[in-house]
Image 1 (cartoon, rainbow, N blue to C red):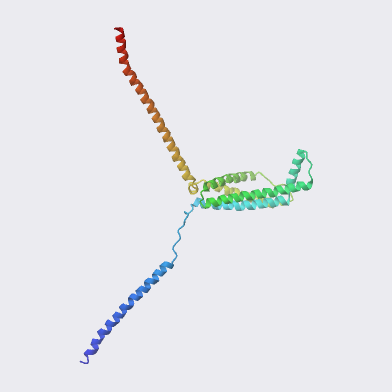
Image 2 (cartoon, helix red, strand yellow):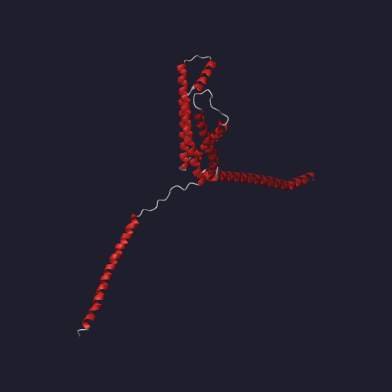
Length: 271
C-alpha cells in the first residue's frame, strides 16, 4: 500500500504541468502574433516611383547639357571680365564707327557706351543660359513641353558646334594688355562646349530620347492621321468614279431603250 501512493501522484503532476504549458502557449503565440503585426505595420512600405526610369541616352544628354551650361557660364563671365579689363578694342571700333558717321562725341560718353554694351551683352548671355537651363529642366522632368525644349536645345547645340569650327580661325588681339594665357583658357572653354554640344546632337537625336520627350509618339500619330486622310481621299475618289460609271451605264441603257422606239416611229412615218 505504501509503495502504490507515489506512483499514483506522478501522473497527476504530469497532467497538471501539461495543462499549465498548454495554457501558457496560446498567450505566447498571441504575443508573438501581435509583435509580428506591429512590425508589419511599422515597417515602411517601398515607395513607387511615379516617373519611369530615364533611358541611358537621356541621362547622357542631360548631363552633357548641364556640363555645357556650366562651362558656357564660366566662359561668359571670363569674356566679360576680359572685356572690362581691356576695352581698347571695343573703344577703337566705336570711335571708328562714330568717325564714319561724322558725329562728334566726348570720350567719357564713348567709354560709358562701351562699358554699358559690355554689361548688356553679358546680361543677355546669362538670360539665354537661364532659358536653356529651364528647357533642360523641362526635358529632365518629362514635361508636356519636353519636345519643344529638346528642339530649342538642338538649335543651340548647332550654334555651339558652328562656333567650335569658327574658333580655330580666330586669334586674340596682339596689342591687348591681357596676357595670352587668358585667351588660351577662354578658347579651351569654347572647345569643350563645342565638343559636348556635338555629343548632345548625337544623343538628342536617338529614338530613346525622342520617345522620352513624346515626339516619337506624336510622329506616329501624325503618320496614322496622314494614312487615314489618304485612305479617306482614295475612298472618296473611288466613290466618285463609281458614281460616274453608274451615270454612264444609265445613259447607255437609256439610249439603247430609245433606239427601238425611234425606229418604230420612223417606220410609221414612212407608211
